[in-house]
Image 1 (spheres, rainbow, N blue to C red):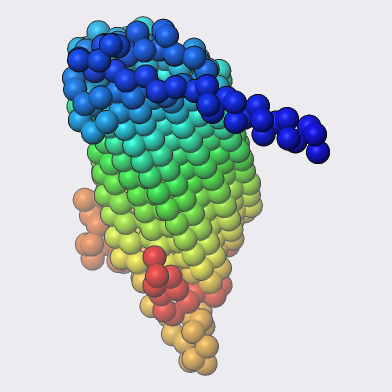
Image 2: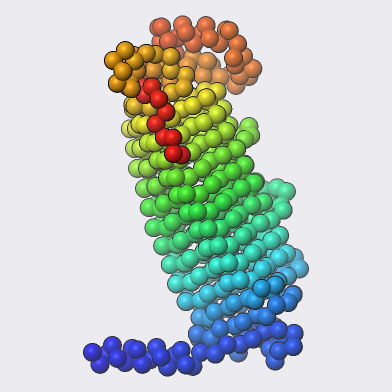
Length: 412
């Protein structure tokens, strides 16, 4: 009991000792760098309304930095703005513009190195190279930020939120656009990405590399080079996201490469060149997703095993499924297919004859993309019918034995 009372006493003393330092043109402290120089652990730095032309600000103390409405930090294109090298810090309500760019240095509006227990919130970043760059850190919260840039090429642009070697991170309620990748995770684990809007980015809305045991949900990825890429990762949960309008010659709603033991459910894939493109994917459960008006709903390349597709809606896609092998170790069951023309004599809501989602024309286009110009022609109908009667090129065991007669996921 005495020990607990001592902790409360020490906390009370630390609160009393913490002070607020004001920064403004007419204040005693006129620059943010000077405020950080005199600040002590636990102090609050209040940046008053105004324009501050500062960059390369190093923060190695546990402080709180708060901006008043109208605070703008202009890096003038010279370098990065803040670098935090301390635990237990908070920065919020600041606007940062004109971060420098480089082919050799990762300049960022906010860079965090080897920190934990921090919050970055309610900030606006415009004309950045990297927005928020985090290295070897954990237990961070990044929320309610707006990050944008106007870079024209992938080589000259950085990512909005870039985390390398992170653990227990939360990224939510952010808006990201005009960047290379909206959000990038590399060697990140036990983290969550949710309620973000990532749109009009050059490469990916969200990108995972070598990142295990993460979850992303209730995000929208719209009109990016590709919506989301998950590569060389395992134990990823992806649910209640919207992948929309990701068009282009090599665009996907979701790109999966060498991933294992994932859950993909209750997502909407709408008007993408390819809804999901999978290569080297094993033990993934796809359930209760909706594929609406995509070029291809799903493309499966080699080395995809033990995947289960159930209770998904495939509606009005140009091609529902592309499959490049005659061997099949994946299961399709109880899905709804708008192209299904079977019947339901016993009125149990399940078609009485199986559905073959892989058409011969899909196989041909997979081998010879130029053949796509024949889509919707009578020739295509004839060859698809002949393959349906006597499968030769498509896997004869790739069937949905219990196709649903009505759409399943009306709420998505």
